[in-house]
Image (cartoon, rainbow over all chains, first blue to last red; front, side, top):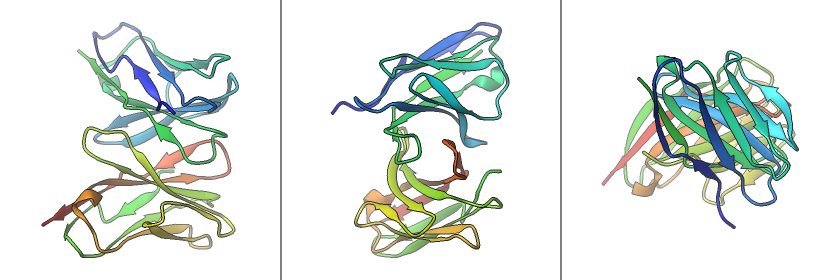
Length: 112
Length: 109
């Protein structure tokens, strides 16, 4: 089976812009979770989707949003980018959301 | 509340053993362990569930003390390939994992 894929792998944006990141889960996986990884804070949970429904949201401002499509692919959007949004954004897929998660390679976002 | 991992970093020689601890202030339903090598995505190692069920790789062992809300990961006879940052993620019954800040393990020849 193909693994989790994320596009793009690298992105450079300027403050105030918005960005959309994409995640394609492993075939058959219906749960997709998103995480932000920074050196200081580690892995922080953003949100989790299952069958197009957001079931959980982490402690992030409303500028961070996401959605999931009927084929389980997911996107996350960050509006009005700030310098502090620079991070590695990882998505992970699983069958139910509560079991083992398979991470994608991540999207490295740099905000200048 | 983010779980606390200890130690923050450890250096081992090949063949030595190590224990990584994960402690939470919240009641836990599950503890998940992942390893991330530099520049790579985290890789699943093990899940420990309330009630004693465990799922994971054969060469990895871990414990989960539900009363103390603690988990420990045991790495025995370490190999160079064990190097990386180990994260514990705690689940409180919802579809959300809260990860600790990680323990950096370096195995040297």
